[in-house]
Image 1 (tube, rainbow, N blue to C red):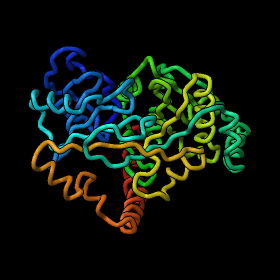
Image 2 (cartoon, helix red, strand yellow):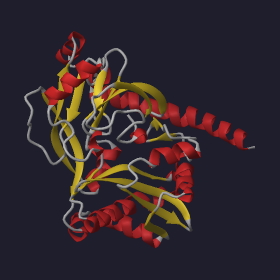
Image 3 (tube, rainbow, N blue to C red):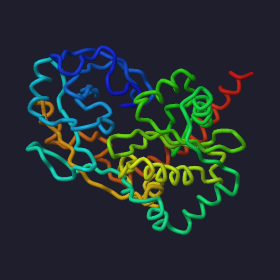
Image 4 (tube, rainbow, N blue to C red):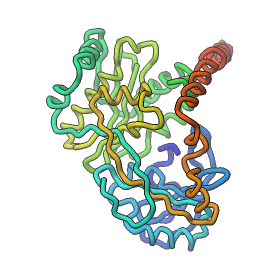
Length: 340
C-alpha cells in the first residue's frame, strides 16, 4: 500500500472519538483503490486483498509512538465497527526486537544502518563503494538537501518517466502526472527530508526520508538509469547518513533487507552500504475461519511464497526479458507519439 494517503485519511475519526468505518481512496501498486478504513488510536487500519482479506496498519513504519499497544482492543474495535477481514497483521518497530504480545508471529526483516557518526559508517565501507561516492563528485554530481517545491516535483516526475521498467519489473510511477507526484511526496510534511543529486542543474536522483522519532525511514531512493555510471545512488546514501548524524537520528531504515532472493541486486546494494538485517516480530491474528485456514496452510504470504526460489529466478528472468524487449519499446513509442 502506498504512502500516498499519509497518517490520517480524510473522513477518519479523530483520535479519542468512537471509531467508525469509512471508505477512502488510496494507492495500491500504482492504482487508486477504494478501501474500508478504521481509525484506532494513532493507527489507520485498512483492508486489502482478494480471495482472503488482510487488515493492516497503514504506513505502520511511519507512525510515531506505539502502533498497536493493545491488540485485544484493536480486535474489539474492528469487530464493533464491522471491519470485514480474515487476518489482522502488524509488526513491532525496528527498535523492539523481542516479542511482546501473545499472538502468533513470524520474523520480519528490515535493512538498518545504526548511525553513530558518518566517519564510522564511512570507515566500514569497502574501497569500491568509497570510490563510487568520490567518482560521483568528480563527475560533477552535486548532492544537497532541498525543499519540495514545484521544480523538485517536476524533477522527480522526469526521473519517474525515464523508463517503464526498473529492476525487471513494471514501474508503477511511470508517466505519472505532476499533481499525482506532488501528492505522493507531500504526506508527512513536517517530518520529510529531501536530498537531491544534481548534474549541471538537472535533478538525476533523489532520496526522501521521513523522520519517525529517532528513526529515519527511506521512502524513496531513485536515480536516472542513463546516469548510473555517475553513481548518484551511492552519493545520495552517503548524504543520508550524514544528515542522520546531524539530526540525531540513530537508525536509517530502508524497507526489507531481503524480500525473497538474498542474492538480489537491491539486497546487495544495501549490504555494500553497510545496512544490516534486523529481525522483528510480525503478528498474524486470524479473524475468521478462512483466516485460520490461510494461516494453517501458510497461504498468508501468497502463492508466490510456495514456489521454489530457483523457479522464481527463472520466471523473474523471463519477465525481465519480456518487459525490456516488448513492453519498453511499445511504451517508448507511445510516449514519443504523445509528444509529437
